[in-house]
Image (cartoon, rainbow, N blue to C red; front, side):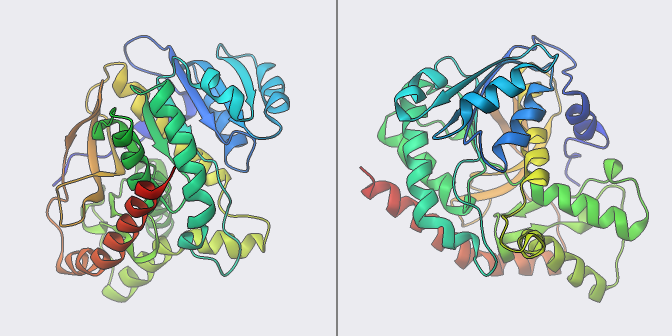
Length: 340
């Protein structure tokens, strides 16, 4: 059995209150893409947390207004908006954590990979600025396709000679949040007390929920297990369809992004035993990047906890995800190598 993810109610409680158990609550956090559908609610949740002392909001439009609005909230984080590429260096200076939800969302009929051309350039440009102006910061990438944007981020940091694989995270937390919620619904449990590790990647069949490692232990007949797994894998598309052209998952993604940032900051503050899944550089499988539960610490990834014991059904999913994962990773790496 793997150690518990950052729960039972711990991550939910951390998110509700944003409270650290130890250490200074002085995280300087930047949100790149702060005016967008994810960026605004994410910035609101970060502003609401006593863990954050400074919130720097960047986008190519509307950030002065978003920052002015958030700055009136009666919490301690100071908020400043930065507009356009010339203000990006100032936004990033001194940041401990940078969260990147920038980019275009999916529309009905689109896969996450269809976003590649637009979002790849955006992520490469933004992470290049991070490598120059806050090379030591924790980089949390939300922009899809995460299976490609994390390899892009890594290659960009390598180009600048400041690459540290322990500080670059693909935020897959929404897959875990969804798995917890859907399992809780089916079993009549409190979702804040359910913890399902989700490994692999962050698109379709690369999303691999390990229901066998769920705490508390749950059992499903095979047909129900397959249906549940499919729902977790296609939950993003469920929201895209429901929004009917008005965007993709933004509110639940903001919640999941904030949960990951609070876990990371808690660990940076010295809290022990903080575990979250994330898509990172990995030697756990034949795929050079792979999401597994990670023990977080002061310097990012303290230890990759690996896949642990899984069922034949889950093993089959891992095997079937490999070709798509490796292709998405290569696509990102090739893009970054040619990016000027």
